[in-house]
Image 1 (tube, rainbow, N blue to C red):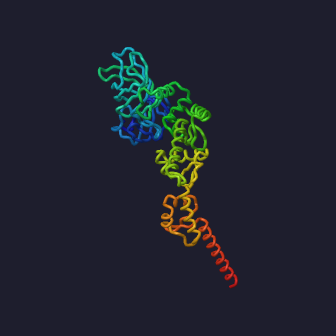
Image 2: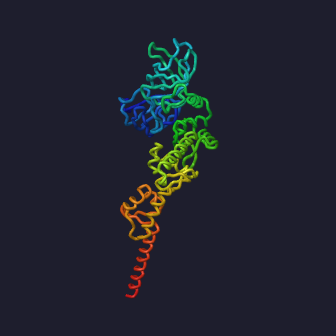
Image 3: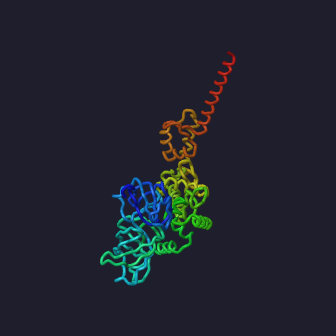
Length: 411
């Protein structure tokens, strides 16, 4: 508008907008700041849900704004190309709908073409309801509870609609998977605890704040649901701290935690069997096999260690009962090497000589067991001999220091 700049209009469906707020326009991703607000041509300092609102935004190019986009606070919403929904087919439609039908999808002010995937059935007859997953040609912004309408593109016909129950599905569902269908039922009809749990399941391991945001629950019911899930063990806190719906504490659902715990212990056990003369699996190798972020990995290992299911060995992880043991032949070679150290404690065999005597794997095991101590890539001492050398050097230095102090006092 001349003299004002960019003005967008729409219905404020959630949250509040105030003059000075930084905002983001999705799905395009443009950002700007609110210069002014009007509701029914009346200037306002802030706008509330349910009001028709005109928003004057600075720093945004009108040529890049499209009908159907959404004005949001930054980092609160994410565009999606896939939604799960409950759908009811109108009685007056010309024919049933089938799996993979192409439809037009309308929600809010957005419109896009979508492929309709029927879940749990091959087709829906006139007047029937069912679960669907929509693959959208263009990204949209939606949340759980949003209403939508579907139309056939040709011949043009409104065929029905319903409610979005998951606005960020993890992937394409198996169409006849009973677990998927039960999960959708929980999202649509369940208690706040069920809704929060389904949101947590979709995220695997995430902060409580992220789980709450995905669930779309208000703060008070979210806190009650969180307390219920923690109390009955369905949700496991990976970190210590305040357990609230607005907390950044990492949490994980019990099914995913059980799976992660079993997989972690199995990987460690397999490593011990493969390398019985090593204290444990390197942390980085274990993290790579589990495909976890550093934060989730560290939190998960910390919890397993605190429950005495694993041991953290400064850079490696091991089972609590694991011990390095040599067989008879290996022990004989170790005894032979140790005799050489005993014969010349201050002129010991080199690293290469040690490896030639007992093999690289056993030599590394002796280092990990603190039987040997490497002072350089080429020089190694028996641990007790090294400690004796260090003690004698310190005693010599202390004696010289006392002598110098006495001489200084004399002068």
